[in-house]
Structure formats: structure tokens, C-alpha cells
Length: 192
Length: 121
Length: 104
Image (cartoon, rainbow over all chains, first blue to last red; front, top):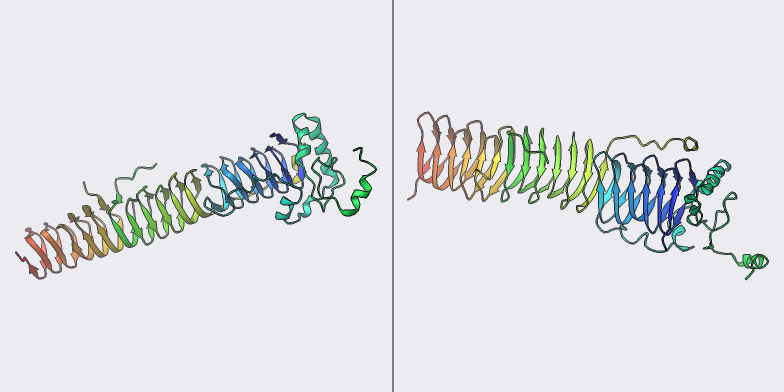
């Protein structure tokens, strides 16, 4: 079941996003984005991190690599500094890009198709210092909850096992790895 | 697609040039060039055309094959069906889906994501 | 219409081979070989051996010319080099210096 998430224009996300379904970014993401569906970086949207999805469309700004298993499209107004890898690439006139663009072989295929499991994706990315959520980032997240569409952002924001930002909403259903001792602790809370 | 001006040169489909092509005017390559092309006008590599060498021109429109670096003062357009490998520099670069490319784009521009706080309103 | 045209502003330094008609209006230094007609325009300066089905010279050429059919030097044209062709004409006002072989 695909879900659609939106990072609104007034929202800033510090940390990696991953999940099923598609994502539209009109705000700011400081971190990597890994989706099984489509990722759109709209006009005014900005991502500082790598984006991996089936289809990626950019009209905003991206500092990072774009990897689309189906295709990548840069439209007028797009500004990208990073590499692009996809079987089909479209760079419209008026789009600016600085980096390598490859449509053949090499990592263009299958990156985003796998369901991001707890252990799979994080291994690919180096630990990002920016994944720590600063206090001032919290209010935007709550704003995100208020708007009905953006509430869906919850399942999208996955936590990485190592870093547990204190201000985060409760962990998504797909739990990151539980350490040996954690089982013991959780017994109390579990109703099952 | 820009039509060649009257002072345009054409290298026909069966023509092979091994060496340098330089000068004024526009050039349409329907054949094969192995060597550098340095012209003041518009350059076009037709679907049947193939260039193995660097291209310096006012603009470049590629529907055929190019293996080499490109420096254009104007736009560089890679059409569907083109096969391009090399470093590209132009005022504007467009790549149509259906092309096969392995290129490095060195477009000159500033990427300013802006301060993080600016987004919060 | 010629299949290949080297326009007036263009210079080629190297070898050209073709199956089509070739019209040279620019400059060439190297070698030109076509299985069809070759024509060197009045504005051309060519330093190359030229082989074609027929070769017509209205510009300046330094090099050997060979054409099974014919070689013609037009008025205003200038050739320094040897010619090998079944027919050979030098128009009034043309210049030529070289050896001629019109093997029949």
C-alpha cells in the first residue's frame, strides 16, 4: 500500500527519510531520502543529501546524488550539484546541474526497490552528523502533524539504530534493531 | 533544432574525416570525424553522425554519437537516441530521455540552499 | 547537390574519405579521396593529394590529382602537382604546373 508524504514549505527535516510510497519536498531536508516510490523536489524545495527512489523529479535545489531506478527528471528552475544515475534522464532547458550524469549500468537500477528494512539502508549511508535534531527543528515537526496530509510523515521518518534524536515522535511501527538488553526492558510496556 | 546558416558545412553520411576541423561557420556531421572540431558557429551531430574528439562551438546539438569533451558558449542539447560520453560545458545543457550518456556537466552556477532557518515561517 | 560541403570558413587538417560528391570551399591540408565527383571552389586553398571520380579545380591546389574520368582546372584555378586522368582540361586563365598522365 503506497503512501504519499509531503514536507511542506515551512518544514525542515534534519535526518534521513526513508519509506514506501512517494514523497514531495517543498521544504528543506538535511539528510538522505530513500523511497520506493516517487520523489518530487518541488520549486522552493531543497535537499542536502542523496535521493534514491524509483522516479525523481526536481524543480528545486539538491546538493547530493540522485539515483532513480526508473528515471530522473530535472525541470526548469532545478539546481543540482551532484551525480545523477538512472536508466532514463531528462534535463530540461533551464535546469542547472553540475556533476556526472549516467544512464548506463552502474547503480542506476534497483536501489530504491527494496523495502527499506531496519538494517539495510542505513548501512549504505555514512552516519550523518546532521541527523541530530536540534531543538528548534521540533516545532516544524509538530506543524507537520497539524496538517492532515503531513501527519503521514510519521511512518516516513525512520530512526537509525545508533542515533535516537530525543525530540522525535514515537518510533514507527517498523522498529530498528533492538539490542539484547532491550527486550527485557520492553516486556513491561508490551501488551502482547 | 537550429538550421545551418548559409555558410554551413556538411560532412555527408559516408564521409570520414581523420584530423582537425576548424574555422567559421556551422557544421553538420552526418559521417564520422575522428579529431577535434573547433568552430565559431553551430555544430550538429546528426543521428548518423559520430565524432570522436573534442568539440568547441557556439552550440551543439547531438542526435548521433559523441565521445569527447564539449565546450559551447551556448546550449548543448542531447537528443533521444544520442550516445554521449565526455565532459560537457555550455550555457545550458539539456538531455532528453532515451539518450545514453555518461557525462560530466560542469555548468557554472551558484547553488545556495539558503540558511536552514529561513525556511521556517 | 553535393553530399559533403566544406564551407568557406572551414579548414580541415587531415584525411577525408567519402562515397559522395565533395565540394570544398574552405581550406584543406591533408588528403581527399572520394569515389564520386570532387570540386574545389574558387575560395579554397588546398594542400593535398586528391582522388575522385572527377576533379574540378577553381581554387588553389598543391598536390597530385587522380581521377578515372576527368580533371578540369577552371579559370582562376591553380594547380601545382601531377595529374592522372583520362581527360584533362586547363581553362584559359587557369594555371598549372606538373606532369600529366592520360593513360588511355
